[in-house]
Image 1: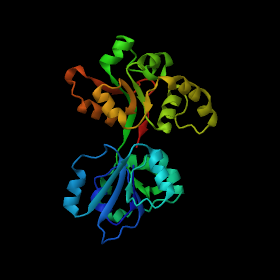
Image 2: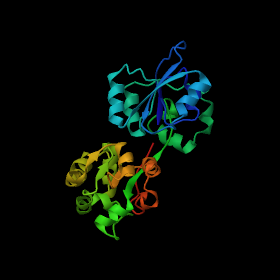
Image 3: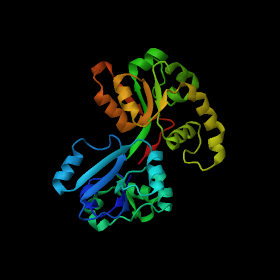
Length: 278
């Protein structure tokens, strides 16, 4: 999701967009757009092409967790013009009043946005006043087929969340390296869904009960929590399994130099399903 912090120069960039939110007022004479986005979320030449086409200078910074972004937004005076929070964080940021409304008259690409995605965003941002969808993804498991089977055998449950959420499996897989997203809302939703609970539950007992108990059992066997490091680690073979986002896992596969011997997949458990994020 992208939200606009400053709106003067939005039209050229947002027309092709992410999920965008606006935060301040951009001085026309500056012609500088400061964007704060997730790492690896645009093509290498996007900024240069935009600057060439519009004459607007872009300052582009990246983050790897919603908590980092939110901390800066709540502190105030960030200097950002556009930021890209996840939908799950958007509502409380709107309540805090950190964003400006989008001027849709300056967004010619708005008509091309998927109406169904706009409806989903509207659950957090009524009437799509402040934000627009930029991209969406699924949460699942990226894994190295050969390494996982070497540890768990040919019958490894690679089509099930049991692969990483059954403590006995994770205890064995720690030898080749396991990482989880540094995104508590994603991990808890995944665990709640695995346990047959509502992944969007607002009941405190759902989080402090079995979900926390399971995560405490898994924690000793997780090498690290991070929301971008796993891309290179999977590609380089430094880890063998990651709970991650679909696009990141495909990036890891593309970056790998191991050819046909290096195979990675991302799956959604066909019985339990998985999370969609935007």
